[in-house]
Length: 280
Image (tube, rainbow, N blue to C red; front, side, top):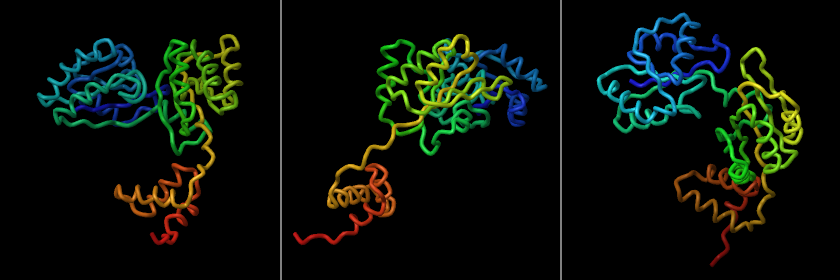
């Protein structure tokens, strides 16, 4: 079995009891950084009798084949990264995809996540969100990627390095508008945890102030404001509901879907869907 095991993003005490048990029982532990893993195991007071191998971006493709051989032989392989859940902007996707393709069992030990922790403390809407990882380093490519997200109504979560945080916030203010609300989350769960909230223009100025930005950085940005309701006739709304119903949704769910996509209230869409049909 392949086990994806979440590790602390800061405070070691956040490690789950299941993580300690899995490490003590694993036949193979694949770690993003074996030295950091050894320190984590020591902090947890866990003896790791299994084989410990490195599994990082540079050797992920090659090492995946070796781990698959262990899985085929019936071994338990535990995959850990430096912090958080494997595969989320970290190594893990390749081995999971390969194991799934061979119908080998894959499970996870959930735990700390910088993405969800930052989202929760940001003070921004959490009903719909997306994770965009690290923005491109080159200014032109970064501007293109952020520009494509400008009209997205979901709250967005990004990772960034400290020395690029100011430039990225400036690019976000340009792409999303200077007044778009955001939060910069620094050193989450650690001693010097800091969450700074405000408009992107203010956060860009804050980040550009000397040596202020240090440590692990997660940026959360609110989504675009919903567009004004489209000028749709009653017959257009009724047709949209009928189209969604044809895909297998109930009338109630179809009305909710059309209301969400158009920004028109459910009451109006409901009335349109139930309006008497004109004789042809």
